Length: 169
Image (cartoon, rainbow, N blue to C red; front, side, top):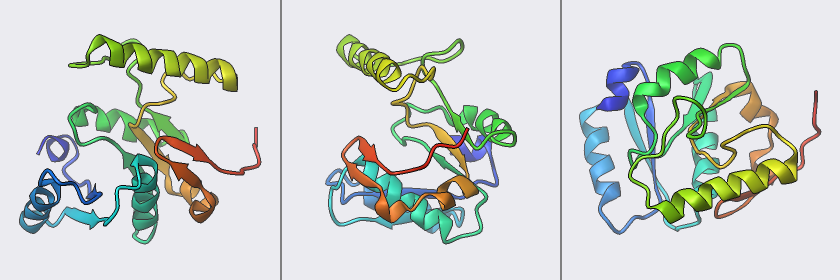
């Protein structure tokens, strides 16, 4: 409801990895009541990365020109979605960040935030990129970016991705 209040025209795909907590049934009920919502049921728990890849492939079979990934646990504010969509007009990929002015982490235990900040610092230093929230999952992609990747060649193990891509400046 919050997402559609922020962006009423958004199509939503909920990916359920055979969750034992009733997520799939809840998602099916939402989809039955709203044609803007669909559900992709996966039979195995292959991890977040595999779920993202399945969702990207699903989105690319449709007419969508922008694909957004976000968590459904409330950690990504749907009220910020218009800002991501606005920014992706002038960029190929837009990252929502917890660790920039205006960003925030809410309801996390201290050790989880420490682990996240440490992982981001390590990734930033190891990869030599200025991105402060490289592990965040609130992102908007232009369709062309996802089409240029061979999603079938992306290896995903949990939260780790590996893909061979020629870097273009």
